[in-house]
Length: 264
Image 1 (cartoon, rainbow, N blue to C red):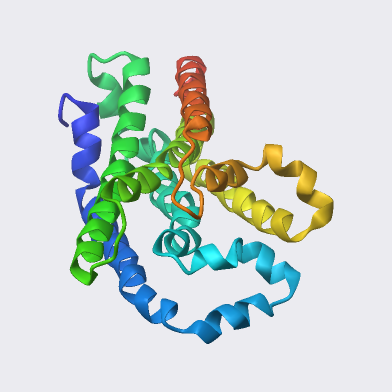
Image 2: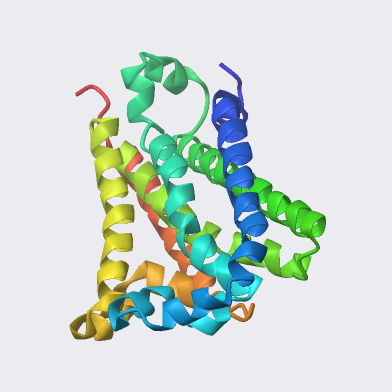
């Protein structure tokens, strides 16, 4: 086992990182390629404007959707934390529990490394993995926009993609906490995965239900979605909050690991 848990964990995930990075980069590029066809269908705007209010609320500003920034926000940026969290939660939930299930936990703990370092390096490795995947997505968008001549600022593409990371890191931190606080990796995955899917479903229902409009403050995806405007404007405040919460959750994972009796 490598002395650096961070590098060892990244090495173990290299295949997943490559597959997810290339796959999501290609999927993102397809959205850019498809946009000119979507934009050149004026009847599409008329059709969208005739949709019931429930569907209009899901789409947002219909006129803005006809810009490449608005189209990418609707098709990609709004759901990016959901996509990245699938990878992050699956790996974070195995941070410790998975080691013992693979019979490598004793070897890990035999290293002269403090428990807090084990937690921090495991989290950092998974967070790095999803960050590399996000970088692949941004690169795919930039290359494809240049190839098709789409007039989109590269800085916006990078920033809008990076905006999906803080919420993803928060879900990863929750999965890591579950891996150290619970006894089975599947329980940690169910906890963090349920939080991801539940948050996304809640936001979808909240958008279409007037009775839930006031619950926006407790919806992580609402804050994430609001940070990237249809016109390309960006707001960093939600990202700062998500990073702070991810830090707190990671510290909670350190505390949970320090208190855990590994003999049972």
